[in-house]
Image (cartoon, rainbow, N blue to C red; front, side, top):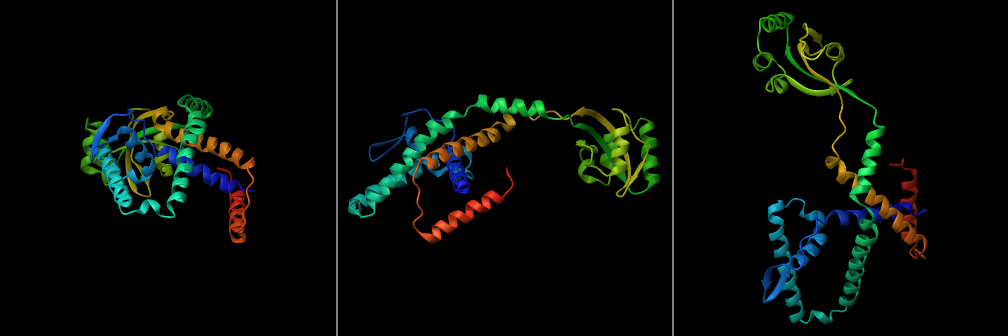
Length: 287
């Protein structure tokens, strides 16, 4: 019934895990504040806390930003203690909250993130690649002009030894591909207008077509290559697969913990909101 709550909790846990960049060497002192060390371990904890907030910070600046953040935390903490805020009635509750959060992070690292590896991701990648159906693609260049007479003239120049790329740059009204010598890159069926597609798929690599008319004008097409679309490299999709595995693992673990716990929503408005969220989640198509 409360799958939506479980899923939200799992997503929060996964987001927290993904915000941590690879572990930094332990213990090295980076700076001192009033004689107290600020170490790379401290930076790692701050990095975990700030997470996505570091996304807009250039990588080469993140270390300095984190160290400054730690310094400001310590300066304000010392100032708060000096002001007598250590006896604030909310301090115990805050300390208990942050202790629970720290324990949650350790549990996540050991029981969830520790149970997902690159090997698991590679196994899923290999299975997906093996099940992929071949998708034929062609790579073509074209020169697009308004009138057939212009296209006929270009065809004649090419037959006389003219350079296709140079003519595309000079003559094509498709300025996007024209600046690149007419190259449209690889594309599958259904991505181009029908007359252009039919002509391209009927050609052999290296051939140049007679003028082909479409709704955009007249095309002279050169087929560069035909292939089956290659699978994306593992390194390019590994993070996405790992993210999915982490979410799945988190849902399983958190779901098990919730199943064994006695959960009561005492506030009626809260109870209705949780039930409505769960119902809405159940009505959504499976991802």
